[in-house]
Length: 136
Image (tube, rainbow, N blue to C red; front, side, top):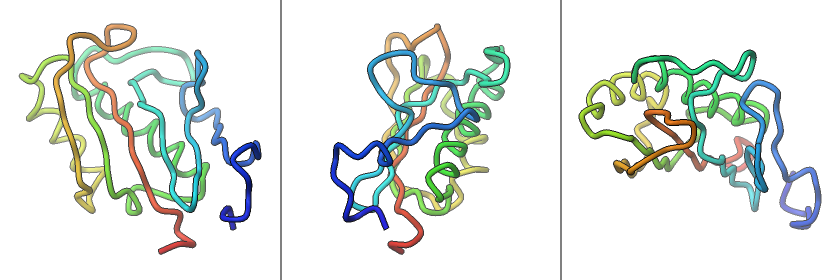
């Protein structure tokens, strides 16, 4: 249904109140040629702006935020085929994976890297690429 839209069409931009709003020159997500691209989701609770104090809580919130964007686009975790994950410390890798594996059960292709710093000093960030269910 999105294939005939032009790149300039605003309907291609994904926006939901159930994930943190974009605070810069970007969108929460975009749909192009039947694929959903989410922006990196840090673990900010969109309801009150809070950030959990552990890698487990932050991983959970980041996954929730990715899921909200996918849902707004009419998709879900089962249609994700690629993720990129950023951790502020690789010591959190196992704990992050424990949470991540509960959401991304289809085991999409993934890159996971440690970075020097993430926005707001958070411990993780997740971005995803998914297929629109109508294209499966």
